[in-house]
Length: 251
Image (cartoon, rainbow, N blue to C red; front, side, top):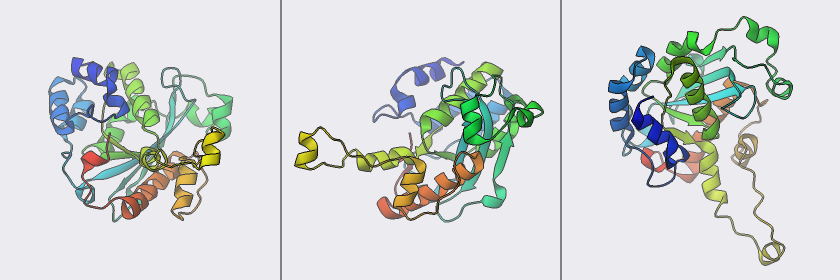
């Protein structure tokens, strides 16, 4: 893994804290020179808009993974959903969905959630077999996710296992955008005396409900990617502006 990528994942940049966000176009240009895998090099070669770009002008792609569990170090990806979008349009007809074969056994709990079974993954491709397609869909686009720790870390870990190189990319995290509002939520005197904190949920379904968006059956990668795409459109329309620069939104 290039040393710059090791430092980026080791310091605060992966967590998206203010002051730690990289210059994404410059980082992509550097990684394109240092990356060995041709599929990953093509991904970085496609570049990334600069932080000053208004979100309305940015190419976006909503992303969701279903996994065997919640730990990127020990669990694996079992399905991927990608939905290209902009603030005006969601490209449902250009969306992609893959079931992939993880390199770890399916977990009984996760099967209950996402419904993907051993028989479905048995003949499914390994992520390495479709990596060029996945990265091709993502190339040049800012990823939209609901909980960046899952999608970004799972894909990074999966690539390190398969090609001995990780991946970094900017994301707009719709969960984080909700958290920005509800972290500031104040409690009344009685609640404070009782030690209670604001209880607004920032989970995907609850966040969508606040904007009057329809309920979808959860834990399907393509459906959840679509749900995140619609949520971002609502968040920008009601709480931000189409002219909001990417640097105010991405991590």
